[in-house]
Length: 157
Image 1 (cartoon, rainbow, N blue to C red):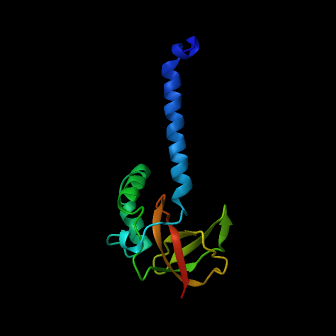
Image 2: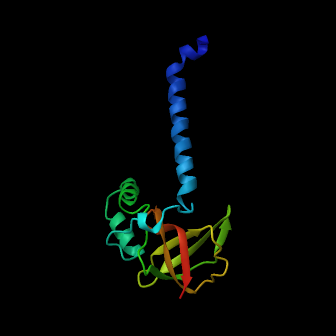
């Protein structure tokens, strides 16, 4: 072992641990929004008592700080599926294609809650003002402003 490494081994170990944490976070973040789901219908866990995106945001945001919101969202909603008939809303903005993934902003009917729908399937046919129904897997919440849904099916009403 070289002398400089032995001398600074604690600092080097701390730097390696920090890099490993950052790399893990980056991989999780990259796959969180729109990765396609591989589960069968029988393995899906559905949302508990959340009939709308607004219900999800109300539960998450009923806790103190943004760190609490993230933990609450992860514990209760991330990875769970929206049950049928889905969340009804209106397309708020034109769909965007970024890095092979489609994203569209939808405003939920009656509540105005924002749903960010992500999918590898094309959403180019959607137009602002169009009524739609959203089904998919909750990927997270964004500072109590929106619910991100991945593996999304957006059906025109």
